Length: 139
Image: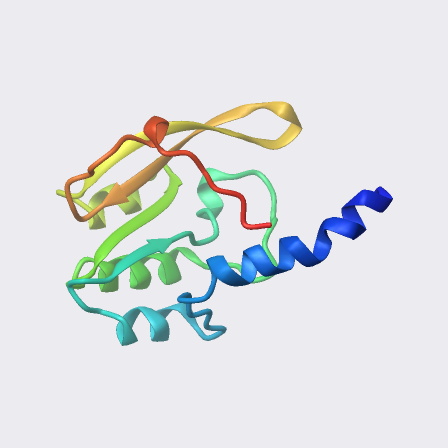
């Protein structure tokens, strides 16, 4: 249940969020289509696909990807001019296709209060570490 003060602050929150998103474009299309459309050297893409089946224990996504879908995505990503960062769990498939990409490891929250080690692969030299980056709140 929301506190009454939260409802009073909502208009300000909406205005702040609108200002933050003023120069952001949000698309609702197949990822492959968007990736191909914005393949320019001055573009940064963060790709966060569903985890590979072999790296998790449950079905947790409304829209799943097969291993073949992951391979297709990865094979497209290695051809791009854009700066690309993709996240997931350690896997032979990702390591094979993204060979030569920079990798970073970090601890993330997992099911039932546990932790897992996630990996980000980048086709560029990183500027800061994950620990140096502070997540901003969207709302």
